[in-house]
Length: 242
Image 1: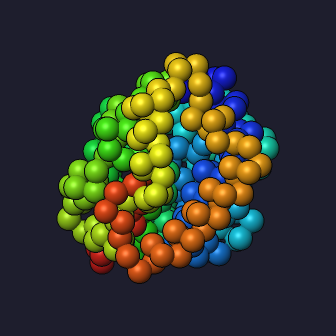
Image 2: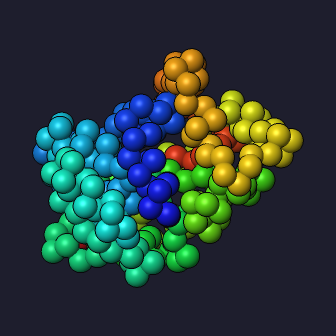
């Protein structure tokens, strides 16, 4: 991702409804206190900061030296600069939780992470993922963000099932009702190559309305799986007893 986009991300993560909703969703599925947590693709570091604030021991991995420097200096998070196309880095220990939020789509070899997963995920540990959904939503914005692909639940399930001891406990599309809106926006009212997805929905009114919707959807998601959506959320547990 280009440096100027990363710098925008650092600010957007603090206030934009999309980032806040994603953090709230993830935090609703983990108990970070006294846990060793590995975050793959650290973004602007707000998720790492939130988990560390709740007593987690967080290590963040990112290919960008700018990201690693930012979240280490801003939040005091331990960072490792590493290309995940080569698999997970050897950090000399295993983790209770490994999180990859909107990172696998940036990897040419997304399977490299999953193939290495059980080496670094403790028995009973969680692997939590979010990725963008459906190639039909592909846009110039995906290309600006250096995405290689979008996923379906079927392709994500197949990717996770590469690890024989990884048991999927939850997999669903998310941001269900936004799918139609974004499909029309990208297919009928096409974004310009310069326009950022986040800038088009960053007003205080948008933040309030979309934030409320995501909060309601997150509660519903506890009991059902959605048949379509803008992104995919998946949680899997390592059932190995090594």
